[in-house]
Length: 400
Image (cartoon, rainbow, N blue to C red):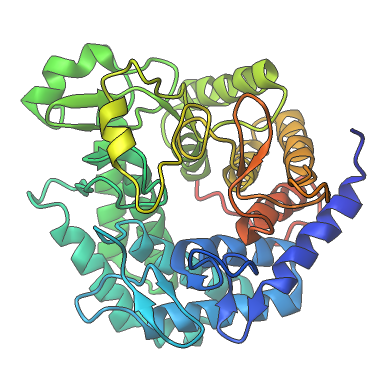
């Protein structure tokens, strides 16, 4: 299917506008499973796309999103999972959301930088400090890495837990941005320390001295060699490809030029093999695998993580949009191809036959739409990819 990128972009903007409320971006306009709420993570990602688009009305919705998020910060420092339009607040399900404090700070700082409204950010300075304080407590041992329980970030029905790379990179990004916006040397130095620990422990090196723990030293041979490691616990190394972390690592400029080139080439290889948007986690966990028992028990309402579905090998336009933004400075053609794939995914028809459903995710084998339609951050993924592939993009996410 040949798609006009400009038409696809305008349709994505329309989805974001339809999901704009007085309280900020709703995860979807569909009234099901709490999606018609302002979510910290979804709202910030949609807001970043709004900044990239330069659309003033969407940027204003982002401001309202940030006000809603910070107005409902818990007194202990962590951020809401989501806020209903009637004001009801959720801080998570069986566990809280380790990634949300970082997302909130990232969104606040990017908004302040883009709009030159530093006073808006400064009114939340105390709350930002509280958020960083609770993340320091989540280290548990003062060794600079957050320890996340299972279900604690966006992939809340997946198996990742422990020292999850995604959560470390978000915190690193938040610290770097906050160091600039609040002119805080302490934040900058902490970000440098975390970066050093990440680069030492999440990429396969020939020198295994000074690793995070003796248990990681024993398991280090399991570390993947062409990608950043998804994470580890005291008893396990996660070897799955994690698109989100690979993208954030590029945005943050982690590793030397050889490592960056390896990551970009690996993303390109996977895209060429699939000829469709990339899975967030791959390969999928199969029923015969040891981790499948953990996977099949970890769900709230119904089991959605069959192989090639949802977190388990499902295809998410939002993370592909962030990947497009991440690879664009390194490989512009790859970024264009990712954008084309995102538009193809968002144009997929739902069961009722209507096209341009902007589904939450798609099946990793059949490419059939699964998840809810008119998912706002699926539209945001398209907006991010398109904006980064145009010369008039208005925000640079790269923090090299």
